[in-house]
Image 1: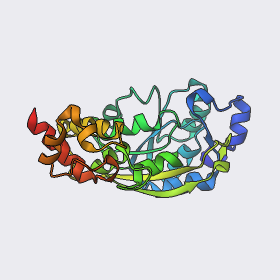
Image 2: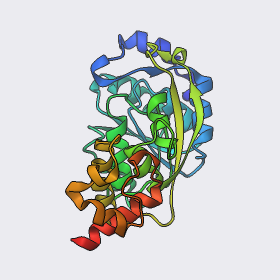
Image 3: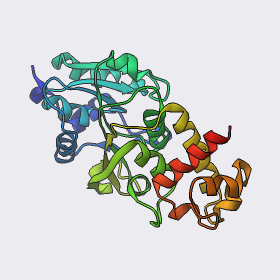
Image 4: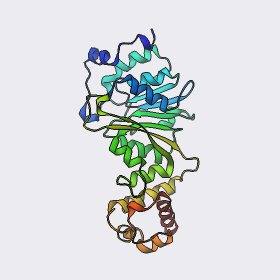
Length: 274
């Protein structure tokens, strides 16, 4: 038996009596055209190791396995164990880990080897997971992730754009980020109330170190926590005008117009004052 012989995703869900859980932010991606397109956009193939978070019924999992990649699927919802095990029974390059992705040790899963992250992320934990992967001790080789369209905008937009904020700064300080696919709500079961988009993230060769990233998170939290205020007000608790001038910025500017390089300069200035 092979992947081609498995029941369709819809048939498998019906056979196991499974449905999406709102509490887990689940929306099943059953459209094979979309899942295969995501697998292509992930640029993975024979011999690559992929960590997939939140596989649910395994639609994207099947598409990734078709590329020849070795897939480790991390799923928190135990209801999917029998269904995913059926896939693993015919796909020796699929490993299953049932755990909370916010707590799992990706470095241990990768076992010291490069690994790509590919996921249709659950809506309610997408942003915390992204921050974990970009600021934690383990760095993926690439990330191809589906988010709500609004979150995708918050990741990819730049200074002066409406959605530009703290998330964009942290992402763009660590990765090259671009939106590569839009997915309408009708591609999901049940359809969410919003459209989604796939973002491709490629970690920069020269990323900020842990201390600099911690400082960046502090200054962006303060600056965007009061984004309509001038920096001299929003950053008062971290050093105010003196800190801003040390970073070579205008104290009267607002956070929404400061480029990523400016926030890194603020992080450096704050570290220098400690």
